[in-house]
Length: 211
Image 1 (spheres, rainbow, N blue to C red):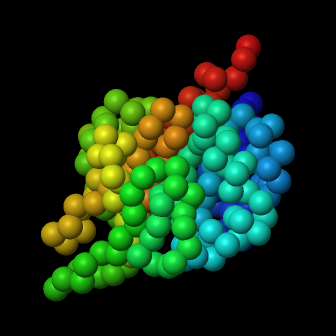
Image 2: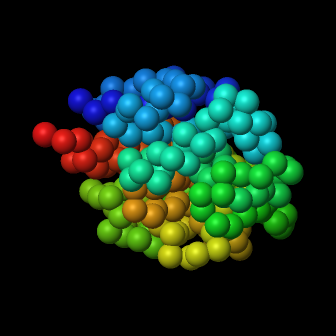
């Protein structure tokens, strides 16, 4: 079974992510150690909370460079929720620089009549990269679970893998570039669809493990 390291930087409950990865066929190991991340077959960067504390915690644990090195190495990598946002250069939520692995910014939903901020609950994805590994065996407009007030705005539109519409605003809900995958929604809270997304990720990891 592939070993997936789940990055521990004090930003959210890791237990539900680990449980979902195990259901998807992986061995999940929570770690804050760069060397352990390097030894794993794949990395998941989850996260719930605010941008600045997330970046401060990553830097205080000396995890910024190991994460960048792992993405560059070609190892399968999945960011979830805040773990998507901190891949970007900066956020309207705070002042800390992000990891800068993806060019672009994190923006806040514009207030408008009749929509709640944060977006909380189930919404439908529009798949802009329908052949991405993440979307295999899924319906064309799958329902997934969101909790967010901010969204990513990539400078290079070709990295966008799915969008979601909240009120009149259609925003990026997932990105995919080679080994780097990340989603704004919570697969671990998205029932069978979310489990399929994680199973697709784990299947990709399994393929990359030398026989």
